[in-house]
Image 1 (spheres, rainbow, N blue to C red):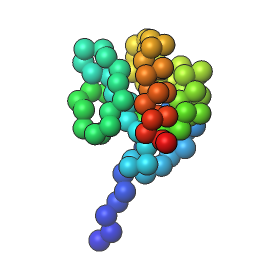
Image 2 (cartoon, rainbow, N blue to C red):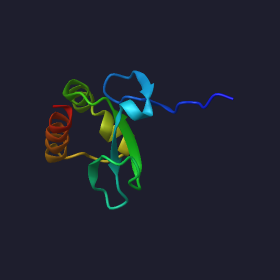
Image 3 (cartoon, rainbow, N blue to C red):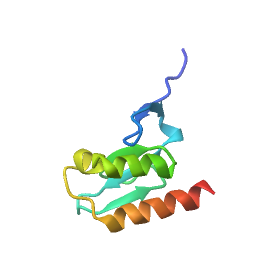
Length: 89
């Protein structure tokens, strides 16, 4: 029996990709939004391509706010963008 690959939807571009190809963003119970590099942090998760353009699309359309049900401060987006650039290079 073949093992199924978990698929997730990118909140930026809306394309469904294997979970391992995406980066997880998590909102903890405390309300803090952070990049989940391990993929195991507790809290509500959203997935995004490891591409600054997808983050820009998600930011413009306020998709993370919709997924998490709370306002996401600009500093959080800036930190996420910096982390994506660092990991991508």
